[in-house]
Length: 445
Image 1: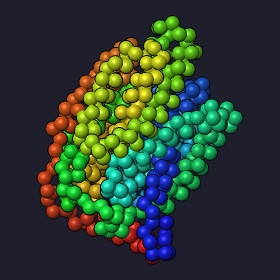
Image 2: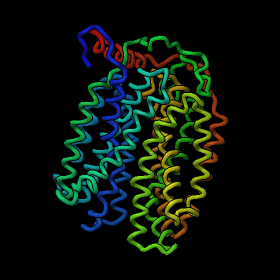
Image 3: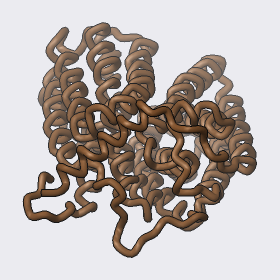
Image 4: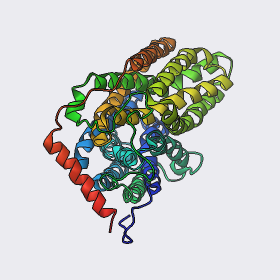
C-alpha cells in the first residue's frame, strides 16, 4: 500500500481489504453455533442472549467513538486496533474458564469483542465511499457483504465444515478464532487509506443531482454536530430502527418459531429442528450477504430513497406473511431468503444514504450516529419477539414489525435533502483534513 513508484494505488485493493475485515467482524452473527454447548454447561437461554445483546450494544456504541477517532488516528490504525481488540476478546473468552464461564465470555466475546467490531466496522465503509464516489451503493454493498457471509463461514467452520467444536472444544475454537481475526483484519487494514485530497476517478465529475433521489449536492458537507440538528437525521434513524427491528426480531425467532410450526404440521421434532436451522444458517444468512451487494448496486440506478421505500414495503409484506408460511419447508426457505435479503439491504443503503444526505467528507463520523438506530433495533426487536414468544403469540410480533416497516416506507417518502449547513466546526474539520492529508502522503511517493 505504501507505494514507491509515484502512482496512486489501485482502488480495488480497498475492496479486497474491506471484505477481509468484514468477514471477521461478521463473527457476532455466528454466536448461535456456540449456544448449545453453553446450555449443556448450565447456561440459561437468557444468559446466552445477554452475551449476544452485549456484543450488539458495544458494536453500536463504540462505532460512534470510532467515527470521532478516525480523523485523529486515520483509518488504517483504527481498523488495526479493531482487529486487535476483537482478537483479544475471543482469546480471553477461551483462555478464562474454558469459554464456559458466563462473565468471562460476556466480557470477552460480548463487551471486548463487540467493541473491536465497532472500532473497525465503519472504516471500510468510509474509505470505500471516498475511493468510489461514482459507485457508492455498489462499493458499500461489497464492503459490508463480508459481514453477512462471515456469519455463515464461522458457523460452518465450527460445525459441519471444520468440526472445530467437535474436534477441539469450545475454548480452543474461541482462541483460534481470535488469532485468525487478529491476523486477517491486520492484513485488510493495510489497504484502509483515504485517497489523496480532491482525488476523483478518471472521467468522473460530481453532479448536482446524483440520482440518489435526495438531490444531494457534493458541496454540502455536514459535521456530526450539524447533522444531529437536522430533522433528516432523526427521520433516517427512525427508518433504520424499524427496519433493523424487523430483521433482528426475525433472526431471534427464525429457529424457534418455525420448529414449532413445522411440528404442528406433522414433521418430526428432529427434522423440524434441522429444517429451521437450515432456513436460518443457510438461506437467511446467505441472502443477508447477497442483499447487501445487490441492494447497494441497484440503489445506484434506482436512487437511494426509492430503494429504501421498496425494501421496507416489501419487507413488511414478507414479515406479515411469515407466520402463515413457516410451517411449510419450501415456503419457509423462500421467506427466510426474502427477509434475509431485505435485512442485508439495510447495511448497504443506510451508509450511502448518510453520505448522500450529509456529504462524504464526514461519513465515518456521521454513520456512527446513524448506526445507533441498529443498536436500538437490536434491543427492541429481539425483546419484542422473545416476550410475545413466551406468550405463544408469535404472529403478533411479526405483525407489529411488519407495521413498523410500512411506517418506515412512508417516512422515507417524505425524506428530502437538508439545506446548506451552518459553518462547520473548525476543530472537527481540521481533524478530518489532517487525516486526509496523511492518507494522501502514504498513497504517493
